[in-house]
Length: 110
Image (cartoon, rainbow, N blue to C red; front, side, top):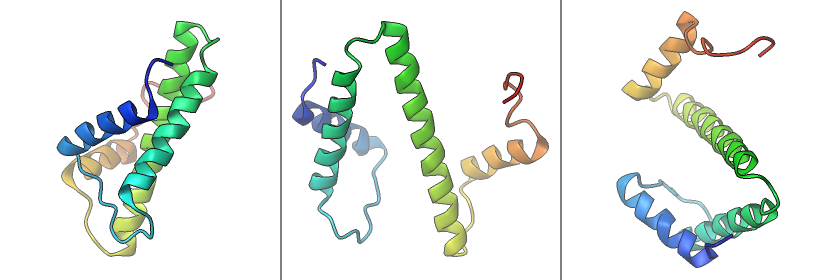
């Protein structure tokens, strides 16, 4: 891949300017966590060098979708654990799911 761990870390920091991450009181340094994730993603991208462009895109979309789902689940669990209300956007998304609109684009068997 044509990006280094350090370059990816810099990009991550730029994205965090718009959407900060609440590291709360984790027993790890933010920079260490960022470096760990960046290293993992660069290694993953390097492992996909032999993939076709479409397969790389599909794999990255699948990984991103899984991470967004995991983040949503963890966010909802955290809010419920602390008795806090959902944000408007999360509540609207879950309302779609409750109405049956969440899987409208699913194909057969999904």
